[in-house]
Every structure is written in C-alpha cells, then in structure tokens.
Image (tube, rainbow, N blue to C red; front, side, top):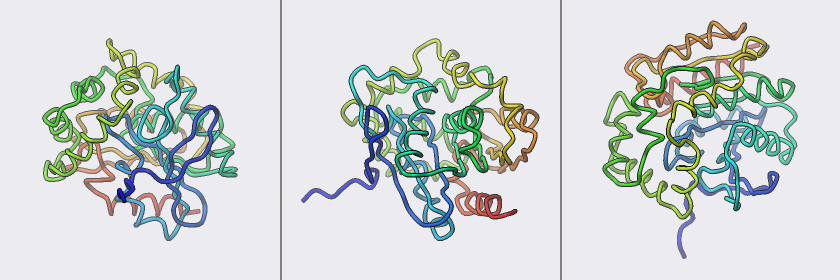
Length: 275
C-alpha cells in the first residue's frame, strides 16, 4: 500500500471546494497561513513548529486554494478576497469563533486582511516576513513567483530563501520540487502572479490603508537577511499597527520558522500566553 504523504491531512468543505488542513493539539486555536512559494504546503511551511506548540494550543494549518492539496475546481479565481473567504469558511466549518493568526509572507498579507475585514474573529496576530504593504519587488520574490519547475531552479530558490544554506538540503529541494510538479500545481501557481509581478505586490497590499485601524496585539517577526521580503516591510508595519512589536532574527533569511525553529516557537508561545 502506498504511504500517505504527510502533506495530506484532513479535508473539509469550504465554499465550492474542499480544503486540506492539519489539526493538531488542544486548547485555544492558532491558525497558520503559509507563504506563496512553489511547491509550498502548510506542512512544508510549519511542520517543524507543530511539535513545539501542540501541547499548548490547537494548531490548524490549511493549504490555501491554489496551493498544496486543497481541491482545485475549474474556473477558480485566485485573489485575496477568495483566500480571506476560504479562511472564514474554514473557521465556520470547524466551529472556531476566534483564533490567533500566524501568517508567513503571502500568509502575512492574508492575516492582515483577516484582521481588517473580520476583526472579531482574530485574537492576536503574528506576521512573519510579511507582505501586505507596498514595496518595489525584490529580485528574490520575482524569482519565486517566476519559478518554472526544475530541480536546479528549486535548489536556487532554497538558497534565496535561506541565510544558512545548510538548511537548503538536497532532500528539501527534492521534496519541494516534487511538490511543485504535482498535477495542476504549476498551472494554478503560474496564474496567480503573472508579469508584471509588481502588480502582485500591490494586490497583496490592497488593505494597506486600513492597517492603521487594526486593534489587535501584533507580533512582527523578520529575518535580517531576508532576500524575498525586505526587512523594511516589517518596520513599516511596526509604524502602522498601533499595538505592534517587532522581533528581528539576525543571520536569518525568509524562513525564520525553519532557520530559528525553537526561538520562533518560543516567541509565539510567549506572545500568545501573556495576558
């Protein structure tokens, strides 16, 4: 019997499609929103953090539509309104009234949009290497969104994502490459961020003018050497969000949760547990 892929977990109806999601631990819910890299899944983004937090919180991590193993339906449109609605539909399907949100990169823009549009459903907010504000697209992000599948291209992206390239292992590169060539994956990915890709940055920043009104306690996390999303984004969010604080990891690229897993989880646990 073929072994089930760890990326594939639970499935639940969210609007017109079924969402693949992970659901671990017990306690107050924390919803993890992944980034927009090729071959990304909730599992690939967050699995190292799960065992460090599941004794304290209920951890929920969906594959956003167009990514991972969430169902792809014909004619699906991909934009922030769709991803926000999917997240709310997931909350409703799971009976979640309110949750803490953790958003990585693209997922950070989604978390911010959730806080703007559905503030009553959000408790505390964590934005890690987040989009959500306007900036000139970086070389790194342009390479990520412009990815065409090949093992060498994936290996190149992992070096862009990381400061310490020892985290960009051949095994991870192969796993992410295989994830990027699953049936339908590249087709949906290539639809999301066409050239000129600066438009994708602006679309992610569609709610920037409302960020000043976000009332939630917000923890902003960024890697100092991030070559995908500039550190200046997080300083801008720190200025905009009234109840925000910033933690910067030195010697860290775009993946704080992978390069500094324990410290990242400790930051989240401290932030969510404090009164």
